[in-house]
Length: 431
Image (cartoon, rainbow, N blue to C red; front, side, top):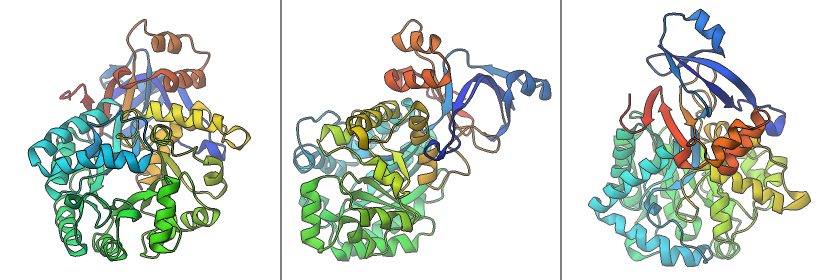
């Protein structure tokens, strides 16, 4: 066992319901060989209880729970920064041509390695990942994630209309390929399978029926897709299905406690109520929403309806893998909404990036904070000496202010260490 000594911050209780930041300036975390936190408290007390165990000193900086990304696209790793377009134009010009290239397995393997490294380097230890439209490319993702040790929930992305023809499938093929992938990867190591129609716009009712059948055939699988991202998209879904965006999934039995829908920028009250009663969560992707001009996320309405919200980087339409950036942009968005905006503090941002994501993915029992009994999934934020963030952290007036500066200025290169189940995965290859 090892004692990790650090300034530790986490948000185990929901600050939207009165939870507070838990902060210890000189904490000790006793971590077992299996990666479980066995003891926590002031370092001197933990050291006194476990005097023979080695101590790993994480001097300076902050030790935080590993980030949980609730929505991120693996095939879009190489197209970040396509600015100046709304959603549907961006899909046609940037995202879909790149996603068609994933038919080349060698290319997909290169992208998978880059994608997994991007997540790990940003301090993301767990992610709900939009896979590829091609089964071998999804295999490549699971293989790369397993090699690095990430916790990944992902699967085959399926569509049968309105995209490039090479990205289309059939209901039977979608079911067969998805089931084969789930049989190989679901529950293997840290991997889980997700059923992923691209979005209702690109799926017929028959394909969504196939998705529902696959979801039922794979116990413990997850369902994820997009919802209410762009007003033009929403109008087209209404024309195609004759119902709301949420109802287009719900009428196939796809709204439930293992459902995470991305964006939801323009929901109706009835849709929010249905998500709440179904136990579904929403992945808020603020930099993507801003870059594509999709709109300002109504967090206040999600909170009022008790719809769980977590953070997603989206990646292709966003600005990178860092949930520090996403947290900061989420804060900006709520400020721009004026009196309607949810008043976010640094504690809210940490909660959205960690505990909320763990809850959305059904992993609250094992990760999301750094309490005894949880796995040691953590990131160590230690910026270069003399950098603006280093100065900000050292001069902060208390932990909440230090955390605010972390979200205001932190980027992936400031993450000096990342652990999953007690194994250090950044720098790469360290035990």
